[in-house]
Image (cartoon, rainbow, N blue to C red):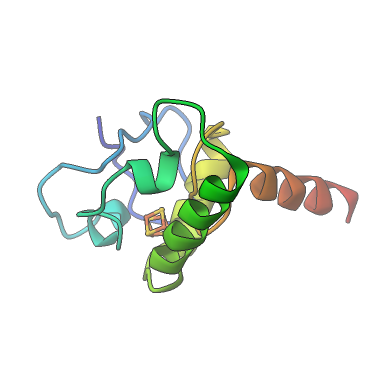
Length: 108
Ligand code: SF4
């Protein structure tokens, strides 16, 4: 299910995004502009098996490289924080990095 929010601040009650994003392009949904639309989701979420640290770091670096060229990075990060996404690289940050960001914001 794709939520119906076009802006960076998700609305209460919006459905969580499914990933990879497969909905047809639309004019108002930020996820349709995602640079990761045609990427292998395992690049962002990892394989379905134990992943050694060195491999994970290389994979996450490659995912973040995709994110660095994404025009909807801030919307993606806002979504991931709103949805408390527990896995994957969203908005150019891994889950521990998003948690750190939230903790930092809470301390300010
Ligand atoms: S910031 Fe990264 S994960 Fe988010 S939509 Fe863009 S490419 Fe995909």
